[in-house]
Amino acid sequence: MKKIILVILLISPELAFSQITWGTKAGANVTTLGDFNSGLNPLLRLHAGFYYKQRLEEQYGLSIEIQYSMQGASSATINQQYLAYNYLNLPLLLTFYFSDNVFVEIGPQFGYLLYAVTHNGDIKQSITDSLKRFDLAALIGVGKETSFGNYGARAIYGLTNTSGAPVGTDFVFRNLLLQLYVGVTLGQLN
Image (cartoon, rainbow, N blue to C red; front, side, top):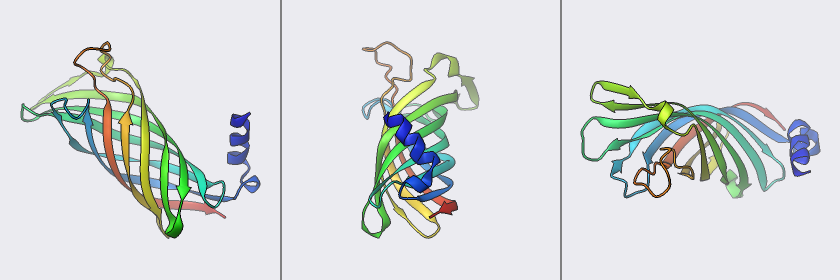
C-alpha cells in the first residue's frame, strides 16, 4: 500500500506539496575500499548524473538520482597500483529541509558494477567478473538549495562485500565514499 501511495505522489504532483525540481549534478569522490585499516589509500575520482526532487511537505521530500560513479582505492605500499571501480548508482533519499533551504538527506544507495580494472603502472587487467555486481550502501548527506540548483556533501558506507570473498577472510572490500557535488536545476514545477 505504501508503494502505491508513493507512486501516486510521484506521478500526480497536484496531490502533494507540488514543488518538483530536476537537473544534473556532478562532483568529486574521495573513495576507498575495505575499512579504514585495510592498507588501501583513498583515490580522488568523479561522479555525474541526474536528479529528481519532490517536496512532499514544506519540511520533507524525496530525491531520486541516477549517477555514474568512479570509485576504488590505491595501494598503500606500491606506487602507481590501484583498483578502479565504475558504478551506476541509484540513491533513493528522504530529504529534510530546515531554514535557509539547508537540507539533510538519508537513505539507501543501490549500485551496479559496470566494470572494474586493476592498474599496475601501465598494465591494466579487468577484474569485473571476480567481483559482486550489486552493491548496497547507506548514505547520509547535507546540502543547500540555491537559485541555480544545490550543492552539498555526502558520506556513503558500503554494506556489501564487493570482493566476492567469503565472510571471515581478509578481502572485505566495502565501498567507502565522501562525495562533494554541485547540482544545476534544468526544470521546475511549483
